[in-house]
Length: 172
Image 1 (cartoon, rainbow, N blue to C red):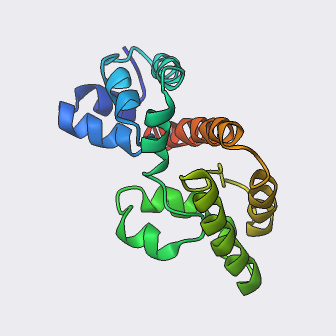
Image 2 (cartoon, rainbow, N blue to C red):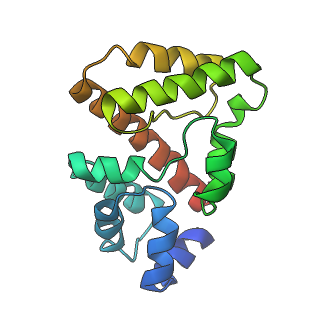
Image 3 (tube, one colour):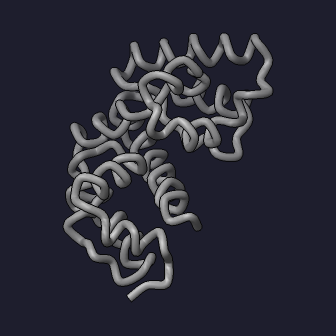
């Protein structure tokens, strides 16, 4: 079968426990259901393939559900309260905001508000390895997009986040 102990645990987990673990990777119920229906996974590659297939089947509503499971970039209060199950992962992913200047944090907060007002969902970015200034620059650029383009951009970012979180789940 597999020599990855985390994958073995996922395969052996109850439906509820597996659901909760996978939901930490992507907040779209449809994605979780499709991935869960692939258990048991013979190896890590099989899980990643199933995840990609599931991501490619998500529609507009599914993406919005996934986005709703993310804290706003730099929103520490949101990280602490609403997203306790992913706070460690999200906190590490957003580590670039830790050393940010107050002006950058304020600009991110305002940009997030402007973005959500314009598009109807929060700004999604795969923040791993990016500084707050880099995230702010991307946010400001993406504010110029139309809603359909931005939904596609956010979905691509969600795919990257999901891949990274699967790796964290599998302790890779």
